[in-house]
Image 1 (tube, rainbow, N blue to C red):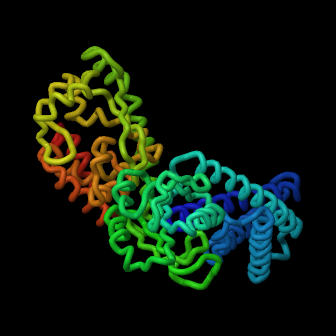
Image 2: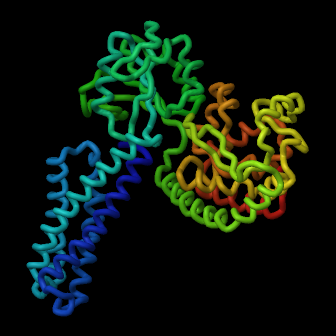
Length: 469
């Protein structure tokens, strides 16, 4: 497992292991004394517990014992956890002996702790692995892989990746560069295109990464293809040698293939985890505000015009994923049908649609748009992970179907509730190309600090009604 998922998993396992250390120590102490009143020196027990927690943390991060957690079998998991518990227990005993406090600490507590911690840690690791497997197999969060190979090795390549890729990867399609196999299905994977139509075919499909294994084609011959994927903002793994030669290359590994990876987007995975934490917290706060305002907004919408309170629409998320966005309804029910009649009045240059004094907008709709109240239900999208507090504007399906490689890079990060173009006077921007430039500037310069600055500016925009329409 690589990237953000690796860092996130490391911290999750660390937290789980620490929680089990606390629980195991409490249970071991209670078994030994049958209560917490007769445990003699409570300060001594607290010191020993702190040493246990410290040794657990050091073993987790210094030795990275969970680096192959996903791949481990039940037996291998038990062996890894046993080594972890033994190392933690022995090192703790050495330290308390060095501190000259071992003589007054119950050895039975130490023994009970080791047994209980091993059992609970092993069971927790197995349960967590099953939960993660279910999560990635039943959701849209797994990394979507596009395989590019040659006719002769297409089947063994797909089979190899299916067996060796970790559970957070999913092959969503393949392309053959030396023969037109379009439409064929190999081991459940559909061949989507040949070499000539590849980029045109995949530009508007959801995928995150590309794996290229073409022994009879040099990297130079595929440079245009690799550059096209680079323009889209997706990661490319180019295989440089045969499979099943583990450890022969220091460049990287993908399903045990040695690869050169052209990684696009940020590699600051800890910052991305923090961004997601901010989204969850911000989403909860936003949902609370939405819950308070919904009865009043709903009543106003219902009195103003017939129809539902909420409006939903399919939008395009990170790397082409579809999701349903939610808003308070600000237009009449026949707004989508009337859009075709108004297209000639479009004030935007490019793929977006916007006109001043749009006749489809209701009186209440004009107010909630001006104050951005209509967008409050999107905090549900933020909390779910479809969107982020800050990001790029999520395009509609109609817009996305017209995208080229350059435009597609806009969706190489999770779309946001607000972003660069929203705080740059969004009502004054009439050129879609300008929006694309602002979105790409955000992607290329992303940081937590930039997100915070945009959120602060957004508050000012909302409070003073600047740039909204």
